[in-house]
Length: 251
Image (cartoon, rainbow, N blue to C red):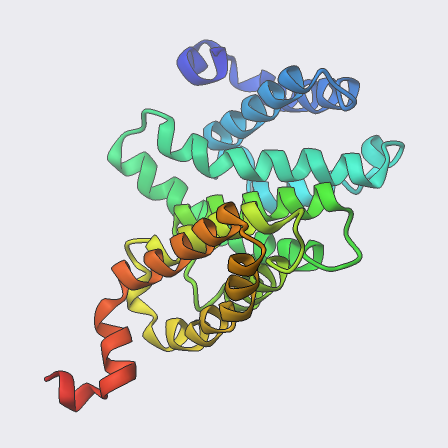
């Protein structure tokens, strides 16, 4: 709370020690309770927003590197990944929920956008069959939040392709569907018609899964696939019509 509301009371010379102490406490509570660890990650995200860019240059890159350093090396790999992904998930959320001046918001958006150069490769490396289930799920959730933030879907296309593959895993199906709905519903996704066109074939390929769900009377799976299709259809109607009729016929 103090980081967000009373930052002006924190002396400049204590910035670095506050950052170190917060990371130290996160290690201390790495095994839970979950609610405390989550609040600590929110606090770290709030600190990033306060210190960027002058007092913590390249904060996202630095955070990713920090979780690979000695202070965190003693933690299990899955735990380190989970904590880092939690921070990366709440960081865009904090950006939107924190009361900021227009100028400050512009500066932070620029800095966080720069951080995507490190976030996207990290998520892509974690969204693989070798990743533990909980890491994969957390990676999908983090990716969804960065799409909300404004990650361009043409830049994220390799990750989105991996999200479609995740639909084949029943343990990942729900969160993967939610992620795809976020991708197609983003208000700026219309700017990338070529990417949407390529992803359209992935949506069409869900027909087999949908048909099997009908045979199995799996209502929940049918509904989620329909939500993905509706999200695509509602937000990219013109592109879909052009795909069927051709752009000249639409005109």
